[in-house]
Length: 457
Image 1: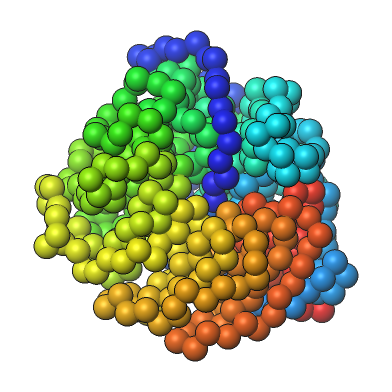
Image 2: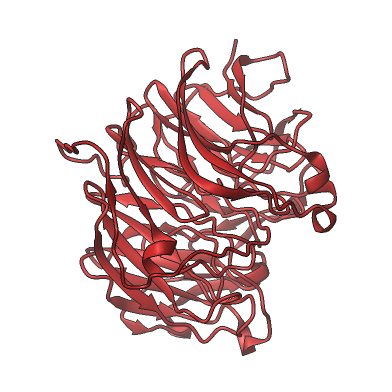
């Protein structure tokens, strides 16, 4: 999940250096459980194990709640963030700034750009009772920028180690005891981030590597790039520049998160932003294919926020500002109209879509829901408004339900399927930017000042 702001970072650029700071001895044993499957009792990254906001193992999740009903526990957090809670078995991981929440910054974002800087934090929380297991600093130079701070990227874990990236460019590896194993400064290595609204893409973990995109251009002349990092050492495995001819204002900027999927029998990295979707070889980063058409006529200067999802050989992508929304089948080289399965203008700007394997569910920023047949593009739910509000969090789908939460803390619980049905509307009196996570029979919701663990009581 990504919420936008303004970022002007002055960091010494060192484009060619590859410095990694090692602390302690690193020992990575055993094979990583692939993210394509769903480890029991886990939500290991921003959009879950399936990289599309779904859980196939969560069940008996709560439908209704309040500040007192169906709350197993809640814990006060140091500050707000757009990062999703990450869960592995009995541990919940959240990022945060150090300073508290100020509603004035959200209500009047242009009049309340804060120059205050503070620390960025990673907290490990006991899933059973909400107690803090440990808290670690993961960077400095945090800023409050419109809706967000620079703790927006969500952590990722394989159950043995935790990796976390900050909007200031610090990439850090911890073990589950909170020991820092290594850290590197991406901006120091490759130059300052040049996104208008602040860096917020989450890292993607697959097998032995982290995959990170830096798609920018609004405030820099440096090229966008994608790179892979050895998860054990922090060393760069490969790095490639990612070309774009997007208009030279906001369009080169991308706030999405990449995904790994099998295409034509081979796992590939999929990156969306800068008016294109590209597929890359996992071994060396080589671009295998490129799909355009997301900024027809190059008439718009909009950044890309929503991430793509993948289902049955098809990539589903919202373009800049949600129009067009394209379902296409990747191939080789430069793709075009022959690769398009269907397209319409029913995409979303900020929230990413989700799917139950049959329908694609899209929630836009104004609380308009559509459901589309994944194969034909048939409109099944035709622009139905749920609770009024602004929606920045992506919807979460689990246990036959869709959880869609607005910025004012109101969650609409919808039934999946061809018939539109609202099961409940639940309200927290607190600002909310992060997407929910569903694990077991628990739902985790992060508000501006609290993390809630919800379960039927």
